[in-house]
Image (tube, rainbow, N blue to C red; front, side, top):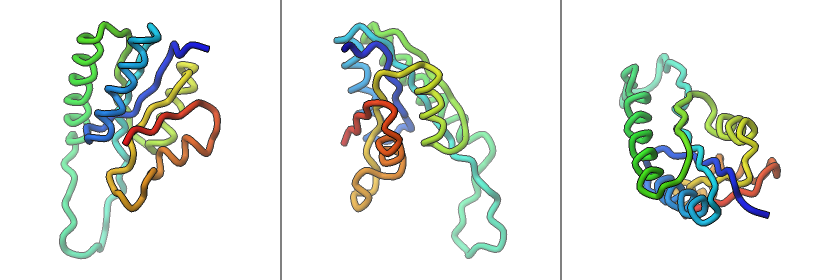
Length: 139
């Protein structure tokens, strides 16, 4: 069974960039495609929270996403791998699942949590728990 379609979540963190590199490497060997996505989390205005809350300036997520998108496109071009980049907002796990469903993914690749105590993190755990695709969690 070949891997012709890979979905990878990329947010610019070192684990996600390693996940992108792994996805591109597998796609290159298998002559597949990579569909990368950056998901900006939807935020709810915080009213009455303690001092130290940093406001999110509208558009910051999109700017970060477009930088990641440029990086993804450069990586795909460099490796000669077909694919695309999607920028969306919402629940990260749900959005990656939706993209994997839309592309009929053969493999989903994500980076491990940035927090060592969490080991896998919520997104990899959710994807593994659904059991709908093979999931590669990159450290």
